[in-house]
Image 1: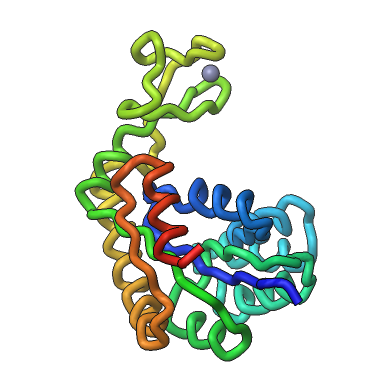
Image 2 (image 1 turned 180 degrees about the horizontal axis):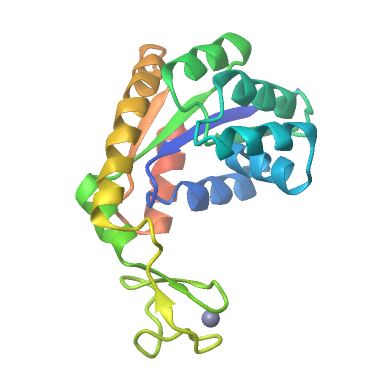
Length: 213
Ligand SMILES: [Zn+2]
């Protein structure tokens, strides 16, 4: 029997969660399970679940715990992850965390820790090309000509929901929901907290070291 590695990655928007999960999966042959992507896939492919999700979202409500749990369960039961997985975007609240621990065993929770000031700095410096959709970051990924897309010359704009007020509200909600999840995982001693402020390679190195890889 070979070694199986099953992880959860948690971190606020702008913490580099997706990038770090992808790097870890590539190195150890793990499957990156992004729960948000699974829902988007169902919506785009007009499945029965996709239709339910559309209806829920049209009323402005959040997708229910039952729906999220059944999607995660179904995805993990596909067993295409021979060497393990990194799950991203789940669990989002205390109830989902309890469900997860009852249904599956995990080897670690990677918590990418980023102070709110740094989230503000990163997120509020994001720009998007209004023509081709290319992402820019005024800190690390500056365009060659200010305000213009390197690829198509289109105008760079800010996302409508990337305002300081909207971001503060999202951060408050994130902390309120995430704290109970981390508390539940900490009781089982699963959590490794990694400082998400350094560059991508340093963060990845710290993750592997703390997981004993
Ligand atoms: Zn462009």
